[in-house]
Image 1 (spheres, rainbow, N blue to C red):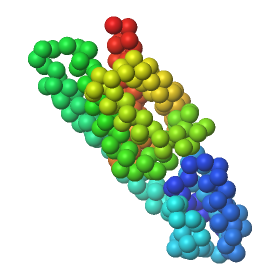
Image 2 (image 1 turned 45 degrees about the vertical axis):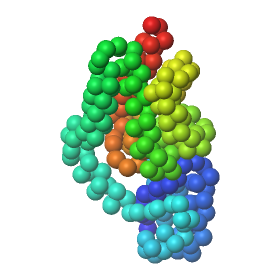
Image 3 (image 1 turned 90 degrees about the vertical axis):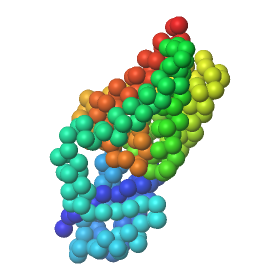
Image 4 (image 1 turned 90 degrees about the horizontal axis):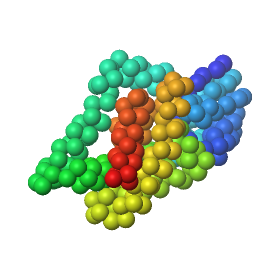
Length: 236
């Protein structure tokens, strides 16, 4: 008998091995095969094993649910239009843009507006990541090339964003902040692009794990706007 479950909290091959080893320790389970990219585990057993028993077998950092439960949630999300799913992201951009305009309206300087926008962008987006750093890192590692090689990079990333936000808002080390923006967001954009081209269904980690946003073209646009601003300021 086979059953597929979703497992959250897995970030690396070490997690994969831990989950498989813990499940195989149960006498009723013959095989446990983890798919790290999909956060799934396929279990073959002699007699059905209850969810509480599976949860008890796994380390506390992992959460396991039946695939059907996750599928129902995904189905409801897919029924929403792309605009509805990304509404929180658009709303945050609108607030950041409005605040940046009001702060720099008199006298108006495009460069000052851009620095303020980029600073607020980093501070606000890092705030959402700090609400659940581990949850963010778990999602981020699924598509960011550097996070895939260095899993702990996802845990440090919110601090990097916050620091860059302070640099822009305080007008401190701007050249370093601009170059860092191009490099860091450039790497992430490569991962986002690959995910979009492969049509993978991956959760966007831009707002951490607090809001469930799909990886879409809007995510790509979000990064390219910041990169374009950074290039513009360096050239000018």
